[in-house]
Image 1: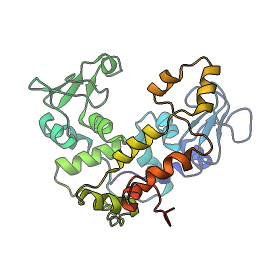
Image 2: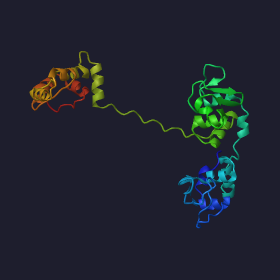
Image 3: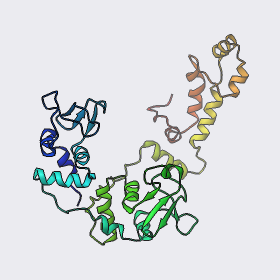
Image 4: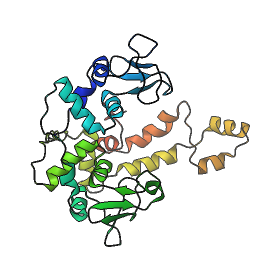
Length: 292
């Protein structure tokens, strides 16, 4: 199991400052010397440390502050703080060495890495490079410009790739790799909730299904085509286009339509009377209460 990151980081920073024995600042109060920049305005507040000196108001968690003060990694700092705070946790230290001893093909299968054209080439999950990740028995190296420019010069361990694939912390990636590589039972996963039953079809869906099974029935696209042909430019629309120096024929060719008072009763009502109720409902119109 993973270390108690949340419990340690939720502890009072003032108590963490006493455990770390951070030197008190000459400014007095709760201020300490900053272990990151050496400034004198490192303040333990409610949920984090804040440095108002050289760090420029940056916040640091309890684990980050302890790792900097003790000169160790975050996992070791979390473990030592948990022991000092009396926080019980199971699982012990992450099995770094046991995970690192496995061969690269096995790790690639667990992480689901995509193989490239070469025998020992893979797509890098850290930078997204295609075929830039080469395996060297128990280590990896990415030759892309992005990965090769970091402090490790592109070299990666199994846990590094697990962090990139699973988007998680180093400790969690190590435990997950150990569970898959060493045969330990994986953590329990809550099954997804069952999908809700399909909703009953609405009036339009039922009308469409009835039309598809009826010979000679007119589908919605037939109604839309006739409706588009009937909704032409009226006199008011043509005058407005001419006032703006736009040719009405060109506007109609590009799909411009307009309706004016009385257009619906004069043009569309007779068109709708030629269709059945099911055909109108399938086209998206409400079922008429009565026919005129």
